[in-house]
Length: 106
Image 1 (spheres, rainbow, N blue to C red):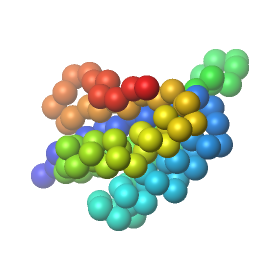
Image 2 (spheres, rainbow, N blue to C red; image 1 turned 180 degrees about the vertical axis):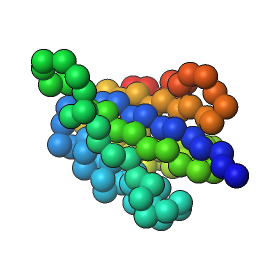
Image 3 (spheres, helix red, strand yellow; image 1 turned 180 degrees about the horizontal axis):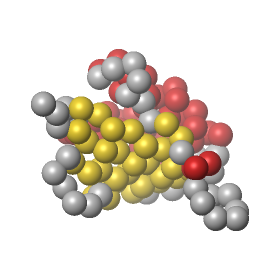
Image 4 (cartoon, helix red, strand yellow; image 1 turned 60 degrees about the horizontal axis):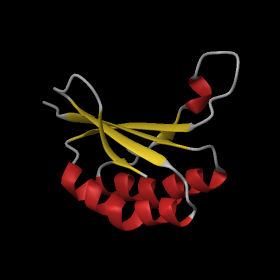
């Protein structure tokens, strides 16, 4: 049995954004759920004849406690995005949802 939640985090292209994900968000997810549950950067998989002008991170987690994750995000990751004035968009799609819902943005 499963209850998968898909998360998509978009932000501007920046090494600092990658550091926020790798040093703050992914350790939380990998500690709480499983070693391989962190976000993966997938921007380089885009089509077209130019590079993406955004950084795209994806993950899918079984039995994600969304309220807990959003509280963590608000207390830990969001202030870091705000500190560096990086725009971001956090989207979520539950296993039985048809579309992604934008939950956080700044």
